[in-house]
Image 1: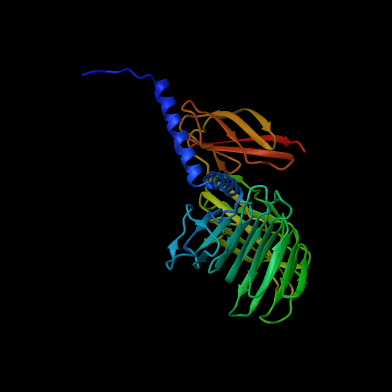
Image 2: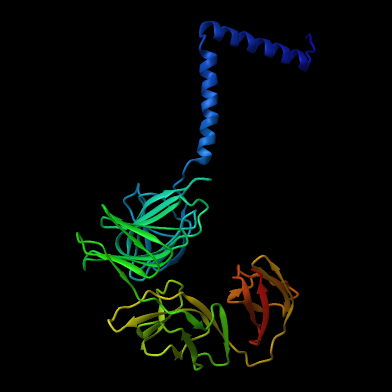
Length: 409
């Protein structure tokens, strides 16, 4: 056998020569080969760039789900139960049962809260980087609350439609929309911001606490609505500590509303009020006391009613937590310091190993084995705030600390 050594350099040279011969042959046989190939490569690169900036329609997600909520995808004939992994595209249907509710958030921050016994369709979901966004939902029957954020592009749009009428909201706006084909009641109430309601050639501009209502086929009718009350106490995210929560009354207070003659207080264990645990209606004053609440997290809001028996939209929802005071030895809880990071407050402290902590109604997820903890609050509004820290150890003991901080403007 005879062996001949060949260097890598020789292989590369012969390979390049072979490719050159093949390329020359293709050019002679097909003179347009080079131009066509170059065009295909250029178009592929251009299409890749365009795809990165094109609109996508899988940006809507469920952020809250309560009770039975089902989805029927646009390319399916079956209804399936919704979960937090479900994404919504244009043409998808969402239906809630009498115990169901869902909050849907789009990529631009627009939020639709679908109330119980409601059927909606995702009409539009256009999202693109550095481009105006456009989202819309259609209500076949039921009620939807719509809230828009401060959009990156002022030309972005958010709309909700029913019958042959469409309401388009400006940024930083909130509205409630109801569509009841059986009773022929259709209305749009603006809680904040601005909106435009259009049906054919008719256009109506709405500002805070104005309403547009119309019967099927009838004209758009604009009117003022009763404003909801502002809540006073319990403060949002406030912890309430009691030795006997079940028998200790909890005081609720709100500010009066002009022209209101009575109020209705609702308390729920869910943020979308699908499970009402206590309700006080026809309250003539601006405060009341409720007894019989077990330890746990609760949400509360209030509506106002006037002499015409018209009812306001619900107030802002506040959350509070009832904690049972331990009858055994008190637990150790110390706050070592606070630090502001913009509008977020950092709380540093120490507690007993194995204890559970709540800061302004939010649980502290990370407590070291030695009891030290570090917690960051949610963004706070400018001004003075009282941060409340409560804890409970394994023996049933509880502790509470309060820190006053100032968020700069």
